[in-house]
Length: 248
Ligand SMILES: Nc1ncnc2c1ncn2[C@@H]1O[C@H](COP(=O)(O)OP(=O)(O)OP(=O)(O)O)[C@@H](O)[C@H]1O
Image (tube, rainbow, N blue to C red; front, side, top):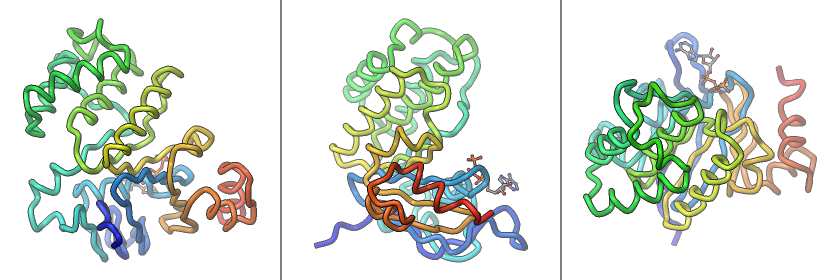
């Protein structure tokens, strides 16, 4: 039997004004244990799609379901099923790394025992142990990004929505994040990830969704997307270039 998708978007049209929608009839699924890459040029609509998924924007048409339910059915349950890593770190300047993690754990109802295990794992993985007592205003940009990522993974929800997480991370941080995302996948979580670093995500995502000017122009596995672009067996970047060039 087909597993119910964790995230299901059907015919989503949306954006910032009803007169000029940014997204046009978007339909996509993310299944349990899947990592799906959302790719597209600047302004293609990746972040806008994510804002709709998070329930921060209301669809003009179509619907979004997380674990089979729309946000309005049970807003608390809907929000609790998603952890979001935004493109740029949004932290409280005077709160320490540990305080951010504690705050997130409380908001998501993480047990004391799980918090201890996961926070320790995260501090080691992202090499942030010696910064755990530092206020976020005293951290570097990459370190602030790591705090956002650590907080999201601490929550352990069914769905992660991750907007361009690699910018600002050092090569070890990128590797740690990718390895950890694979671990989350194996434990059954689903990940929708946007990134411009196609060579990095190429071998990690199960499927890709190519968004262009608010429309999905290709989607599928690496083999399927490269074939749709007429570039079978070529890198994702070549396929992407082929798909979007001339469509401006
Ligand atoms: N707050 C806003 N108000 C009005 N229009 C917006 C707003 N944010 C984004 N847009 C517009 O929506 C469109 C899609 O933007 P979006 O941020 O979703 O793109 P993106 O694919 O995430 O791009 P990037 O790769 O640069 O992050 C763009 O035309 C942009 O100008």
